[in-house]
Length: 100
Length: 401
Ligand SMILES: [Zn+2]
Image (cartoon, rainbow over all chains, first blue to last red; front, top):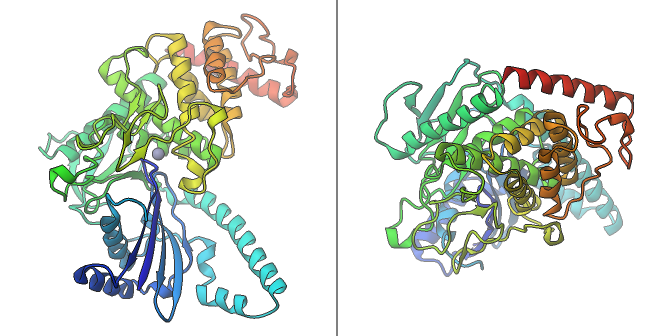
């Protein structure tokens, strides 16, 4: 499974983007990501869920498996509750890494 | 979570989009997809605008009423009440900074501009701290302020960000997003969005300058001072004095803010670079305040505040802000006054020329009569009426001060 992650906006306005591949990630991270994508029911989510307010992060996620692919653009507080653990995991994994 | 606001685009599930995309000739497909996404975008924009108004059912209390909630690294807002108005310090720096910062911001608006809280009607100031784990952000969600702790979960040598309540101007910045939402309602995209961001930086910085009792010349004009850890080469997130110079670090890159229209950036992220091009109006305010001298929150701040409250609309751009601050300066301090000239010089410093044919004064100085205004904005009867009302309002405000 491949995940591309892009985060823009926020108070600091910094762009962070990173790609993850469960084949190359450490096993625990890879397994957790697969579980979180499933828990979020990611492929059934719409393609865009906007949020109001200001300085919220906006995330663009593309998840690709052998069978399907889906891209979602979502604002921080408009993310469904079962998607939030996936966003948090990716945010922490991408932190402090150069863009890839 | 109690509220979810899906935009209209969510109503078209991806599998239906896929169906459309799979059927028909390429031309039909393109046409169908184009019309769907276009109308969806327009409707989404409209929904977004109405949502912003509908989303807020302000708790109006009157006076200064602060509630600080603690989420203990969770995400379901607002969290557990940790400190309410009048309660003693808790000893938790994030809780206490959010409390004190909201108070200092309330005081600036109330004591300097006679504004009662975010909505002008005494709305309760709600803030949540300890939002999620390793959360390097602060935001305004349409009804309250939210603060993360930066990289609290990492060992100190690996940290980039400190907690977001650490800088008073960040708190003033977030609260001002609420003020803007209730006043000009600047759409959070492109130039109107960059103006929205700039007003937040302006009043965020003014809260800090006022608390430190600093003149424009004494202030550092840094936004987010202390937010970056000692591991990072930077003094803050933005500089209003010298946009583009706040940080330069291998991990974070270089501060991308322009200070002049000739460096305006067309950007496909951050809602069209709202946190980036805000450097231009930020620097215009700085240049205006420096030109005027003294405390920036007094004259320059007053002009910017009245402009935000009475003059700008959701789609205003930089040129509108320039023209309107100029006219407001004329109303408050007289056409051709030193203050009005300072506003003109401030915008000129960032490459925005103001049509000086209409100085919007109230009789004093040159060109005070709006009816004689030349150039492209020849005022009609209604404009003259609005101008007259503004003049009366300014007179009353000056009296009551
Ligand atoms: Zn902001």
